[in-house]
Length: 191
Ligand SMILES: Nc1ncnc2c1ncn2[C@@H]1O[C@H](COP(=O)(O)OP(=O)(O)O)[C@@H](O)[C@H]1O
Ligand SMILES: [Mg+2]
Image (cartoon, rainbow, N blue to C red; front, side, top):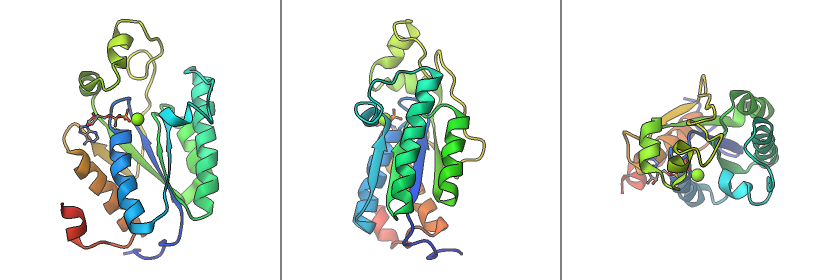
């Protein structure tokens, strides 16, 4: 076990997946747990980033790539200063995600938040799928725009088959396995 070797290092947990897959939901639970365990954590959520850092960008491939590279740049700055970072962004293009991975190198942890399109569309958290299927929104990821799944993510979550707490526990367990977190007492995660 490598456990304990990276306790003071920053890392970037990069959640990628379709809209409604559960990136924000899982990341909020993970954020809470990290705050409890290490105190510091920074979150870059795509929806929020698009209202400031990436304000004005649209959903063309070029704009999506720019958005991801900006988020990746900030994540890198924080990570190299020892800050745990959580990114939740659809990040549909493999090339852009891989560029960020190359930048952050070993401290980049890609989490594929997998949920079948039909289930995401059924959840329709923001009512966007309905609009996308009716053609009211164009270039919507998974409907009329591509989503390229990660080839070798550090972790895959099946949010159609597990509860959000279960998905979040898997993320925490992965961080423990990689040595970024001290393994906690089972009790801490049970309730
Ligand atoms: N295991 C799970 N993980 C995350 N979300 C889940 C899970 N199971 C069901 N859900 C539900 O799916 C929806 C995901 O929405 P959200 O987190 O906003 O997605 P995203 O940020 O990927 O667009 C929420 O309504 C959430 O309650
Ligand atoms: Mg979200």
